[in-house]
Amino acid sequence: MTAEKMMDDFSIGDVITEELIQLEMKAKTKKEAIQELTRLLMANGDIEDEEDFMADVFEREAEGMTGIGNSIAIPHGKSDSVIKTSLVVGKAATPIEWESLDEEPVRVIILFAVKNTDANTMHIKLLQKVAMLLADEDFIENMVNAQTKAEMLELLSKDPMEED
Image 1 (cartoon, rainbow, N blue to C red):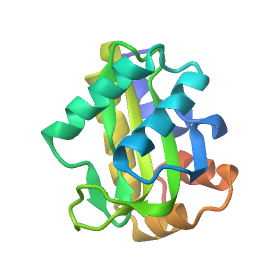
Image 2 (cartoon, rainbow, N blue to C red; image 1 turned 60 degrees about the vertical axis):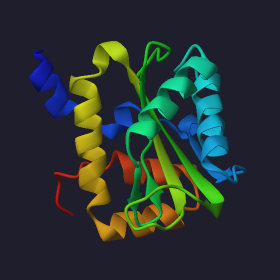
Image 3 (tube, rainbow, N blue to C red; image 1 turned 180 degrees about the horizontal axis):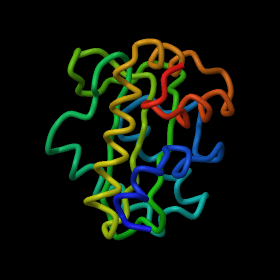
Image 4 (tube, helix red, strand yellow; image 1 turned 45 degrees about the vertical axis):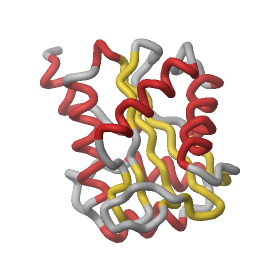
């Protein structure tokens, strides 16, 4: 199977599980949010070094804002610490201050953990798929209002190319 064909078949559902969804984050700050989500990645065996991975995420955060508006942030780390390219999603109990396009705090954080060896193809494909989902206002509203991990997983696993 060619890399291109693999990417066509690729789904966000391939890189997220219910174990990588935290619906009641305790975090009150951006740093705490990234730490909390990083711990989930570590517990799930997707990264091998929390400190190293977080350093890569914060290095990327310093390059430009990852708050994309509508209560959503998409921080990401390309790192040698990543064992398996994954997404981890957190929903904050209280809005978190975050540099964002609409200058509003965030409620949903989608943290990308990308293996350095996957960085070019997988990272771009993941960002494209998530961006397509996030272009849909109903999707964003459903995500912010998701009550269960299964509901969040189902939302994220939908193929944005498929019409209802």
